[in-house]
Length: 176
Image (cartoon, rainbow, N blue to C red; front, side):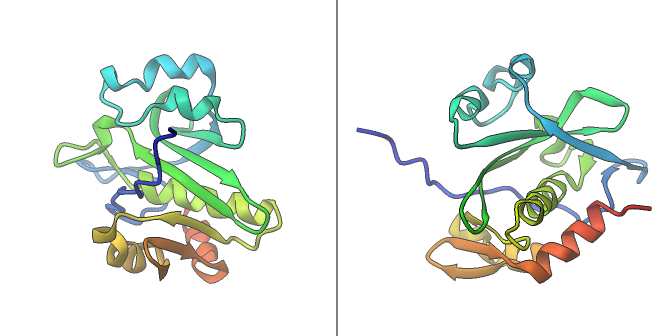
């Protein structure tokens, strides 16, 4: 029997930043998002503090896995996202900040929202008007409504529509 993996996302949007921001200094660092490679997998293991099995995610042919890095520092992964392009939207399966970007001692804020903004941008690029969906842990529904502009569709389903997607994209992917 296949295990139900629809446990719901539980990433916390710590801060809406213009890229990612050093928690101590407040300095902002521009980021880039690229495809997670097999070589990257040795860095994102449970042994290294990551919560999810990214190797398993990468094996799923329907899913696309991307890493967030600081421009000029492509070997240090700040966060990961697993998503799937559906016929009318992009579905986010997993979003995870690097272990050093979680909790009270985190190094950078803004990682989860940066990855969600990327998913919105992919949705526009694939002709889905920025629409994305995901399952939320029930205790975070209000949090996602407030921080991401998502709306609660029913059950634990959350939707980010075109208007909210444009706001996130504008914040994280300014062309200037």
